[in-house]
Amino acid sequence: MSREKNYYSFILTPGTTSKARRISIHKNIIYIGGALVCVVVLLMGYGLVRLTGHEALNLKYHSVKAENESLKKENDVYQNSYAKLKGQISYIEDISNELARQASLETPSDVDQQVGTGGPETVAALDKAADQLEREVRQIGDRLRSDLLRLASIPAGFPVNGYVTDGFGLRRNPFSGEGREVHEGLDIAVDFGTPVNTTADGLIVWAAPHAGYGNLVVVYHSNGITTRYGHLSRITVEPGQRVKRGDQIGHAGSTGRSTGTHVHYEIRENDQPVDPGRYIQQPRP
Ligand SMILES: [Zn+2]
Image (tube, rainbow, N blue to C red; front, side, top):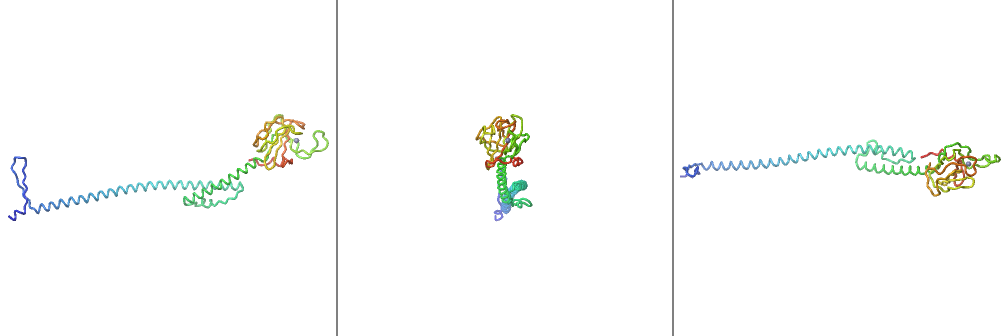
């Protein structure tokens, strides 16, 4: 009877009418089988957990790797841009120094040392160098602009292309041929009606007949300098009008005290006539 207790019996009945069959299995085998099933289930569970963890790690690894590659590419782009910017700043710096020399400005820049050999190694240093360069270029620009303005308002060249028939200074009286008089300008012979142009930027302060000069235009420039254009056949400007060097102010003629078609060109400093020859060679901007 004790032996009987060590077995479990299972009754199997295939179909509904067949004869029942009994299978007896030792209980130890059932226990061992149950234990094996538990171990297999546990192992499978453990494997599944490990596998899932590994897969997650793998995914993360690929994601980090892709991110790293993208960052590397981005870094390369930055490096290229940085090198290009550095080169550009260095180039502008060279031009700036050259312009500063031509504008007779000091070049206080230490940007050159920063950018030139080696150059600023950080973006912050590059940024600082660019700021300083901008200040310098602005300074040079202001200086050049004021130089150009100043030069443009200083008489230069001739008001017409023609022959100088009479110079500045003492001369024999052209009418009587006797005695001497002071000629206060240049006489330039041209064809009647030739356009007459102002020799510098300025403001028209007279545009009407004037004793001896005939039709006269007077232009005020700056620093007390005025130019006069006399004996015009016709005046094409009005007082108060601003003019640029080379602008037409009238046509050549022979009005006033004149012996033939010519332009009487006169330059005054503080209303005193001076030799126009001193201004004719002035540099033009
Ligand atoms: Zn004259």
